[in-house]
Image 1 (cartoon, helix red, strand yellow):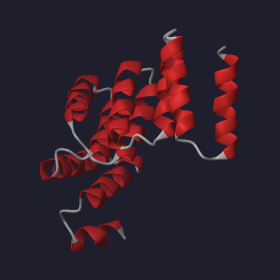
Image 2 (cartoon, rainbow, N blue to C red; image 1 turned 135 degrees about the vertical axis):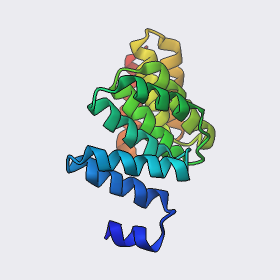
Image 3 (cartoon, helix red, strand yellow; image 1 turned 120 degrees about the vertical axis):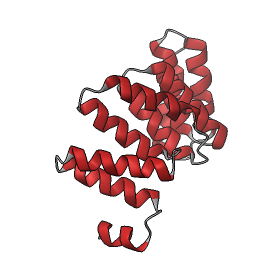
Image 4 (tube, rainbow, N blue to C red; image 1 turned 60 degrees about the horizontal axis):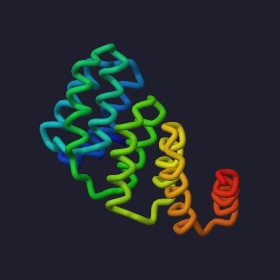
Length: 162
């Protein structure tokens, strides 16, 4: 189906990304990389394509190339806040807190209602020992959370910080 979609629209960056991911997961690194490069020629600002290509490069221990693309990724202005949120989660999981903070902040510029971004910033600030900044993020997360369970969780964390 992905190949059929590509035949119908050879400029659809998400289809190209999907094809590259399929080849990468199947272990066909050479083809996957060719597809990523075709995608980057078409759209050098696709967060998902760049992120997946970085994953391939790191898996192949090509850290210098991955780092170059990561620097480019930080300069992109993608309007989709959820793309930035996903990038922040990935950076935070890799213990790249400075990068994760930057991505969370980009998500919040696009969508200040994303309580998940405030929660991520809370976790980073807490780990850095910046309790007042962490508390500030929890308060903001609480402002934008309407689900009862999450509100309860944020309130509990706020009370435990006192």
